[in-house]
Image (cartoon, rainbow, N blue to C red; front, side, top):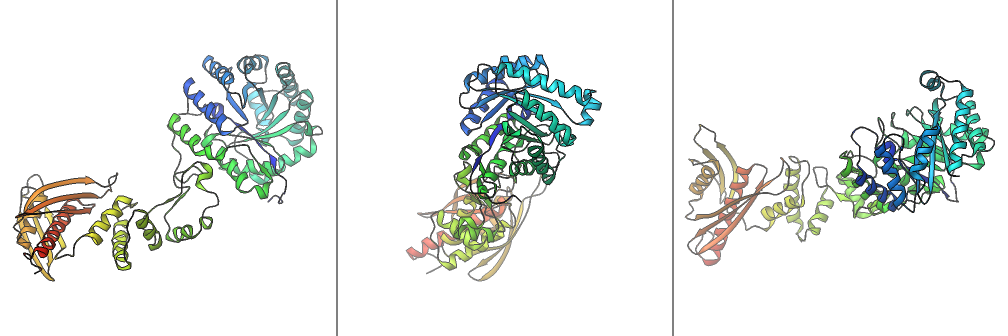
Length: 517
């Protein structure tokens, strides 16, 4: 763990969403989409935008050139292999930028030299130096990357870096190209480079970490702790294979733990979430719910203990505010783990003022429902309160109901009810399962009312949604409405009908004509 620092140093953010991120399977973008992303990255405060690989195709060249012409506040980098053709093509693409950069690279690991390049250490060194000198003729802003640096011989790597810095590279990049390193190892590599490259003070050390072992962000911040001052990353961590280091995670680590790292970025963090959503909408690649910073669950709380703590002080279970990344607020997910404190708070937010015994009754019904649903929504809670608290005192209560229906079976309902404390059970046939249930309930209650309206709505989306049933009944001049909600629509219908009958009796009581007299 790095020592605590008092001064704050700037870490540049080099975003490669449009190059490394875009070239991974499923993430291809057209020119208008790339421009939207580039403008968003500029607004986000990204220091360097790697707009593409100009030699790769005419389309990529045109995209980089167009981005370079419209972006004014961020440097625009074009990637180039260490050869004249790539470097010249990259310059043609970025030369109209307000702040152009050429980013050239070649492998330095023995495994790449032997099996891919089939060249010696000295040959690769000469190619690297020549490439930087070529790029330097176009622009003073040249970055050199030693591909597969983490599997390279350290002394050879330092020798290459020293020579390319002498040739004019103002940024040297240390890529963990295949995501092989672990944080302690990668941090020590950066420290080794700082100690053993004699002219290192003339350049900025950059890192580009891949996520094959899930350590790209950890490796990146370990590098920062050891002196790296540029991090190459992507929005949502998209990129080759398992992806790149995630921009939002790196930025928020440095912001939240600035006391520890003594480093920060220029990123406007409140634009992080909109940037993440933009990439998702363009690529169609969704972010996993439990992803740090921008995942759907990153600021969602269901545990009763956590909800209770948050209601008392946000800092108990949130180390950053949702507003700091562009969300309006954190969310209290009402589910089976939620406690009474969070339930009371949500009820109050919905505009209800309940007595303690009413709240207790509603909370028990909420817990029963939460055992059956993944999430209980506000509309569910409103339905619970309407059923359990706000409705008239019950003369009739449903105890049990069984309905048989099908393509050949005659719809039959068997209903057991509590009528003024007495258990009554009966059965009836109907034209359908709801009709059979209503006829049985009518037999048990001996109601003389007629059904005027029957309506069904889904309270929320999803296959586990509660169905809400509304019925309107009339007896003589009295018309009442009943509502019921349940995941089983037949039960919801029965509850709505019984609710209406109870309201009818309550209304009759007021006029002296009902069973309550």
